[in-house]
Length: 415
Image 1 (spheres, one colour):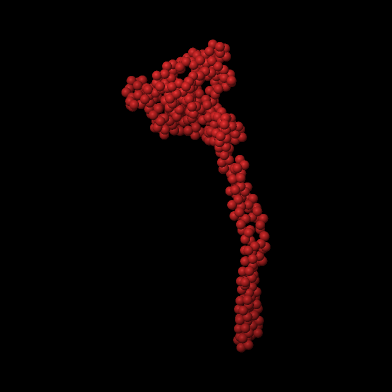
Image 2 (cartoon, one colour):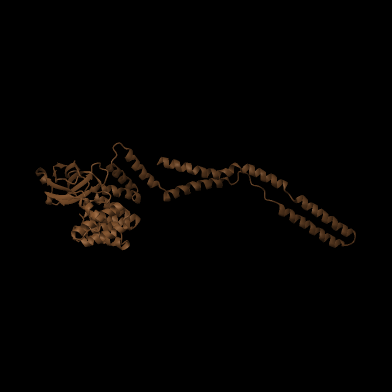
């Protein structure tokens, strides 16, 4: 921040120098003007004209052309004319060279104050704080997503109305499984930025996945609001297609996905929907419009996972506790590739993870060769690990299309 104020000071210096520059020339200009006024005087010329007219008037009087009374009147008129001409040429005296310097000082102060006030209103001071946080975390030896989230949360306490901080926090919450926090960040952003279609679409998607892919009344209302503003909004149409597909309404899923494809700029995401359409058409007994898409979808990676709870930990889990089954890339560089939810009452259970379990089109099982599997029991329902959660894991597991069922035992307590 100190560097920011130094930069602002450096930028203001030329402006202040321009304002102060005339003061350096004030004495020279004053002297030149004084000399000019002293030299340029019409008084002598006016007197010469007066003397010529007076001589002419006296000659006329001596020749008897005008009488004494007329002569006196004419001379008085000449005298009055000379006085008026001389008065018109008289200038007010020059002020001193140092006069008015306080006005320049006031102007310089006004420039500084107005510039700082303008920058506070329109400048990017908040963005610089965000940039500094990101740079510090990236350069820190122990820098991590968790550290970045903590730093941004501290900053958001100081700048709760800075939308760019909420924009930065949302994907971090989402990708780390903190769905409630991600939803809260989106809602705060909507309050600040207005009910923009793209924000409402992301909120609809987050609430849909948080509700275990259930089209609740809240999700439906949000979807209706988005589609009323943009009938071809791809994110909402995509999730409506997923919901219809999972409930066997394949024709409705196809209709939603076809509309979504028209609104996608991302060809890779559009191809995922084409594959889904091909699968839905197969299940309806219709020849897929794109055989290659159907083949690709049929050959897409999937992973069967069997989850059980260690007998020693059963007393520490309630039947209603949430069970998360998550697949991530081995490098940990992408958001969760697949996510399934269940409850402790469902254990032991077997689930199959594939591209349909992706949280976003940009992160799917088909994009990686191997994955890490994590299963966690959360009493709070939070996807972010909390002390006291129960967990189990397996991996790395190669996705070669011939995977056997992966057994995962929930056998440890998260510190």
